Length: 413
Ligand code: AMP
Ligand code: MG
Image (cartoon, rainbow, N blue to C red):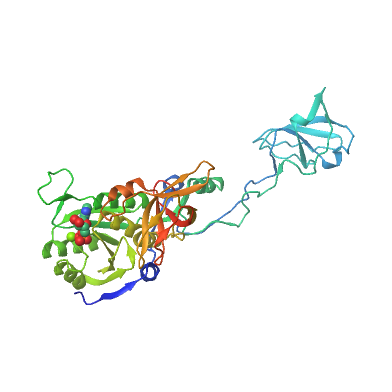
């Protein structure tokens, strides 16, 4: 038994807290052109050096007038069109009482005017417009800084840059930004029964699928991936793999071989090279979970069962990786929806069941189970688009009862 093996069960929250208290954001950053910064983590706050828009402009095609010239109820006002303001061109004429300017969307509001009348609301005849109906002073005028004000914090360090963020940076005229360097994640599978994809299965073997699901989830996170393949259950092979991984990565993830009773040299190697905790977490699927350090690299040992490996990754590893990447929003979204089929579980452990979120005939989101919930049934993860989170005490859910769900790939990322 490893020295720091805990016989106590940790709750999911306790295990997450221990991990999050232990990992911190990596320090490196790089300067990138904004297009290349999509899906990267902003390393510094972005302050606006200009107002957006930088000038008052028209939200409509129409006529720019003085509010003093607006008609009262029942009245008709006639104004002479004396100038035109096109988008991107300066109209230098000052508009006087009784006058107006033809104006187009996005064009600067000419001096002397403060209100825009939509072209549909006037009648034009011989260079004079007639305005009837009630209009508000200042209408259809976009103020300076309507979107962003000078010296405002526009984006905060730690934000994962979205397409809108990239556009926002462009609207400020910012061509390059500083983003966190990519996190380097090395991973390998352990288990003498594992056969690499592309080879023929021998009796007793199964294909190594964990490395492929891990590759997928890590690709979506935008980390640098170091795939170290399948490592044989031999002491030197394990030790060499850990040392090589620690040499080139910030994080090492393995799957399999962490159950109590697995060959001791795996745990011995880990304890010799770093600090490793073996926790039993009161969660299904997923126990046990291994977390620690190999030299300076953060280490996660995931269970070998394919569903357990994925669920453990989503619950414990992904938030930690996001934190290390420098992201500030690290927790997945959770919400309640009615179940449309009964659900069952045993009391004692928090359970993440695989669910399918869908809309009913009233456009209301509802959830159903994918069916069999065995930790080796990877097809349940393939069908699912959410995890249904059932509390430790819960033993059954009736049709129509609200349950907590956490969407994953295919819904909210
Ligand atoms: P372990 O955690 O090593 O005791 O493995 C638990 C179960 O998961 C066993 O049935 C293994 O054969 C299976 N397993 C372990 N690693 C993988 C893998 N990389 N891909 C698919 N199944 C695996
Ligand atoms: Mg094994």
